Length: 242
Image 1 (cartoon, helix red, strand yellow):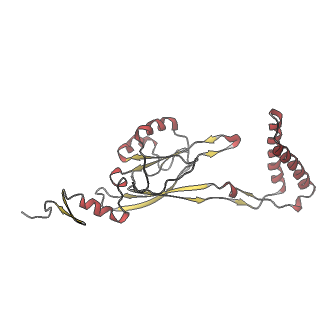
Image 2: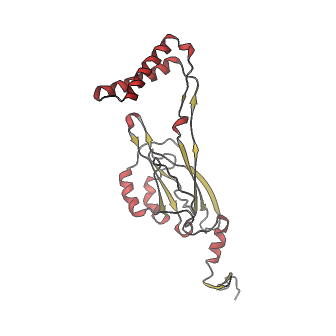
Image 3: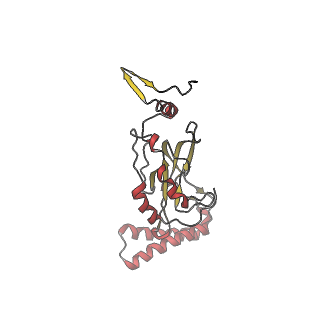
C-alpha cells in the first residue's frame, strides 16, 4: 500500500453515514464480537451505497484519516481481532534521555505557572530534578530504553469473506488492519474513520461460511414444503431438454 497522503472530509462523510450505515450483531448476523475500543471508529455500509464512496477510493494513495476497508469486496461474514503492538529501543544515550526528562520537567513547571500543582505533581517535579542531577553526575551508572509497551496500544484487524466472482459462486477471504484515532502532542487527537461494506443478503443471515453456496442454491427453489425435520424444495427442471 502506498503512503497515506491528505485527509478526507470526515464531518461530511459522517453526515452521509447517518443515512447509509447499519448495525450488525453477533449471532443475529455473520459477525464476531465487535471491537470495544474508544479509539476505533467504524461503520457498516450496505453494498447498495458503495458507489457513493467511490470518490474516496484511491488505491495506492489512501487518505490518512479514512479507510475503505473492503471497497469492491462486500463482506458476507466478518470477524475482528486485536494484537498488542509495541516497540522497544534499547540504544538510548544519556544525552537523549536527559533531553526527554528536561521536556517532562518543563511541562510540569509550566503547569505550576498557570495553576497550583498537586502534591503528586510537586513530588514528581522534585524527583525529576534529582534524576537529572544523578544522570549528569554519573551517566554511565544508568541504562535507558524507550518503549510504548505499557501504553497497551491494540492494533485491530478485520477479517472478511466475500464473493469473488460475478455469479456469486466462488468465495475468498481477506484481512485488513483498521485505523484508530491517535493522540499527538499537547493532547490533540487525529480522528480516523473506517468503512466496512457488507452484503446484506448474506451477512444478515446466520449461515456458516461453508454453507453459503448451499444456501444460495436452495434459494433457487421457489416451492418449499416443510415435512417434520426436513424440507422438500421444488423448482422447474433447468436442465430439461425439449
